[in-house]
Amino acid sequence: MESTFFISHGSPMMSIDESIPARHFLSSWQETVLPQRPKAILMISGHWDTKEPAVNVVHRNDTVYDFYNFPKPMYQLKYPAPGAPELAKRVKELLLASGFKRVDEDTKRGLDHGAWVPLMFMYPQADVPVCQLSIQSHRDGSYHYNLGKALQPLKEEGVLILGSGSTTHNLRDIHFGNAPVPSWASEFDTWLKDALLEGRYEDVNHYDEKAPHAKKAHPWPDHFYPLHVAMGAAGVNAKAKLVHHSWTNGTLSYSSYEFTKDS
Image (cartoon, rainbow, N blue to C red; front, side, top):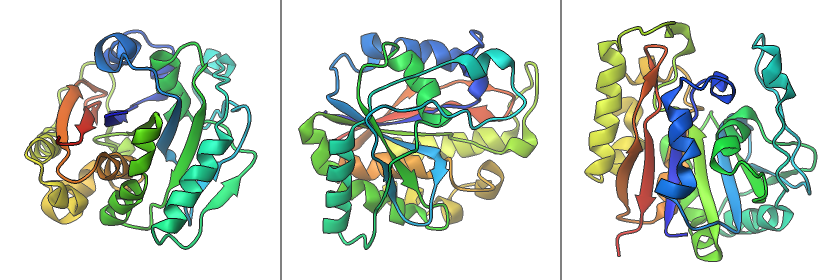
C-alpha cells in the first residue's frame, strides 16, 4: 500500500447514528479514498493501551463492546473479521529487529470499538483480515513515531496501516446538539492540519510543547498516538493530505489524514 492513514473515529454512536458526517466519509472509503484492496489491516486504536507493545494473535476477531450505557442495538452489532496471526508475528519481528525489547502476544483479544466501528463502514463485508497493535500512553509522540517507522516494510507487503483515534479528545468537554466549536478545539485542529501539511512532523511529535491548547485537546494522549504511528510508518518526507474534516458534539474533530511517501 502506498499510503498509511489516521482516522478520527469519534463517538461509538456513529455505529447507529446516520447523521454523523464522518460515517458517510467512511462508507465511501473504497470508492473515494482507497480503491486498492489491502491483503490485511494493521489497526492501531487508542482503545488498546498496554505497558509494552502487544499484538492480537487470533484466527477470528471477537467484537469488543468497550463502551457503557449506550443504546442496546449497539451491543448487538457484530464485526467478525478474520484475524491476521501471520501479520501479528511479522509486526513482532519488525519491532524486535528495530530495538523494541518486548512485544506481547494476546491470543484472546478481539477488535475494540476504535477498530470495528470505522471498519464496519470501510469494509462492511468484514472479509479483510485485521490485526491490532496496542499503544503505550505512558510514552511520548516520538516513541510512537518510531514504532511506526519500524513498520514501514509492511506497506510493501500489501498491509494497510491504519491509526484510529481522535484529533481532539476531551470527553469532559463535549456538548450535545449543534453546539459551536470552541476556540481551543478549532485552534488545535488548525495547528495540527498546518503542521502536517507543511511536513513539520517533529513539531507533531512534540505537540505537547508546540501545539496550542494541547492538554485541553488531549488530557490523555491515547487517542492521539495512533496518528504518530501512521505518520512514522509512511516514511521520511511523507506528504500529508487531509481526507476528511467534520465536527460533532462541539469539540470532537473527525479530521482524518493520508500519509504518502514522497517519491
